Amino acid sequence: MTKNVMIVGVGGQGTLLASKLLGRVLTLRGYDVKVSEVHGMSQRGGSVVTYVRFGEKVSSPVIDKGEADVIISFEMLEAARWLDCLKPGGQIIANTQQINPMPVVSGAAEYPEKITEKLKAAGAKVDADDFLSIAVEAGSALAVNIALMGRFSRYFPEIDVETWREAIAQSVPPKFKDVNLRAFALGRGE
Image (tube, rainbow, N blue to C red; front, side, top):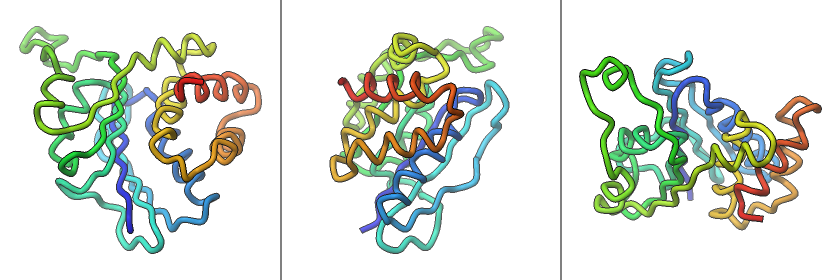
């Protein structure tokens, strides 16, 4: 059975590293994995989405509306933006950080309130936390992506923590390995 994960955020938050890390973890565990190209503007500030599909045999990297088992969102508004892709009763793991999009920055719009409540009212299971603070506690705000992946790892207990640690060590420069391993553990709640 194929599982579908969307990783959504804003350019500059580390969504690409998160999707590469997830792809590496799944490959190490023997899954057939397809990771999409980036959709959106990956420069700092633009909306970014990647698709990760895995299972015994995966033919396409694309996730259509209503097919995502999990949405990992680096920013609350991005979780709301991609909600229609989540399957009924699907899981959202969201960073509570708010990054104002250009219409809010320019004063043309206001940042929506109570996004978590709205996501839950739409039928999503929501696990929202301040992953930026968790990353800072680990030693670097840049490790927010790995803190989010730590939380995500709790939803797939069939993938052991050692596989995640091995993939993190392979995915980040050696000088950042320890801080990322701490961010992963804190994101998991360890």
